[in-house]
Length: 394
Image (cartoon, rainbow, N blue to C red):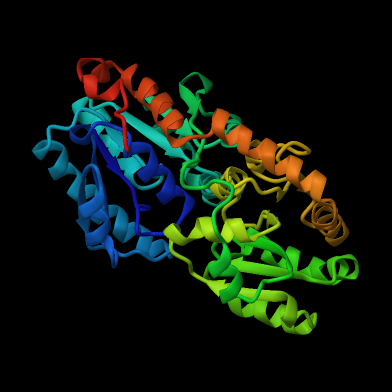
């Protein structure tokens, strides 16, 4: 089968992580991936457990870049489909490769699967003229996979066929993210010794809500004087966030760590006392469809704070693995952070329960096995044993 996606490692995103970690559990000769060429992809592809085709194309977020990327990837996909004798097409983005999938389904009868994420619904709200077209792509698919029940409900609400829509949650590797990892290097590097550490790991984009936590810091510091906010990630919002830190005079309580490679992230989770990401909904932008980082924190045995938006309530169980807040209320955000930072017994219980939940429900192997079962139920999939089982991966 072929996966066509514009988000794939080394691109850093939840969608990129989702696809790589799901399909790496499939037998080596069962999956082919087509993705944009980006700097550093050669090393990723050498280590990938499946064949990856790359095409040089626009990787920007503008409408013109998206259209050019759509054309380049879709034309390349046609050749790969015939060269690799593809039996099932996986459309990573409904608005781009979904168009190709629908056309090939109509012309050649090739079955296809569409994947939907939190931000896809915003596309429908912004471009109402394509709603009918996108509904046709979804409802003509052999199956539609959503990253959360929230995303599934959203698309059912705009006319998606509930019968073919299935949830396969993002997950985490509980062997990589686990309690007890030595965080000495991170603590020394960022001068965190003796501090109570709030951590966010996310792209510095408008929806991630870094500004909500920064805005709550003056209130938090009144009751937790040694608090520090450690921000991991890069992005377009950094300048605005740095100005906000200066305006609030909390420079000594905020550390911008910048981009940190995935292999180093477990140390950062280990260094924190609470993980927080108070995502918000921004008009004409994505919504948080789920949030893999919450699971990474839970797997690390850390309590989490999330907001009541999108699919976050599926990643964070309020009162079980963390606390959910109204991100528009500075007082509510501060109250949740203070409660966890000042109550070690409560924080420890949330962390333990979060870890147990990850072990029980959210391993990548578990999600990949569920996906394999769904793909194996598709007509053509039944004639291809590679789609109905996942392999053991060291």
